Length: 217
Picture 1 (tube, rainbow, N blue to C red):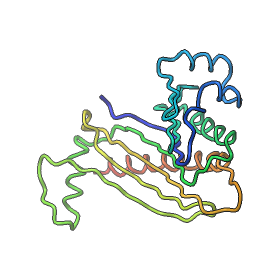
Picture 2: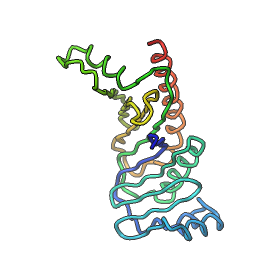
Picture 3: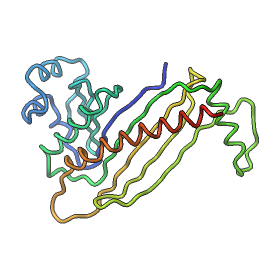
């Protein structure tokens, strides 16, 4: 199977999974009556004390006691993912959270005959004492840390070959935020709405740079 694309918002904190039923999302006007009815009728619906899972607006919501996630495999629905997560946090301002992040995972075709082999060549050229092996496959991980006014941002970029397509590369961009201590409540919904679009553009630029660089070789 092709490597999956993923556009998601993940929030870590003290969550209440049994609250995350389609009726809650209708009550706070994230979805309408028709969308609520579809979500309730779905065979994927789970709502218990330990886990909640539901599909709304083309996105999948999964909530566990320590983690809340909204995700979609479609870039066209990324804005819906952002809006659902931000609006849910607007409705739950007292939820204790200090860490959140965004994932932008894309699969793109390159001009290389074998991405994994090319990555292996690059890895063996590094001064790490690793032998070059014809069958080896390599991936790369790059991490940067930046201090923002409200949070510490950790960007993790992972470049991987795709198992069933030697010409393709899987580019994973994760933006993780550790919120700095503040007095009282902070507006997580507003932070998500402000940072998500900027980070998505940055991830798109990263993909474009990666493909241009790989085309040279």
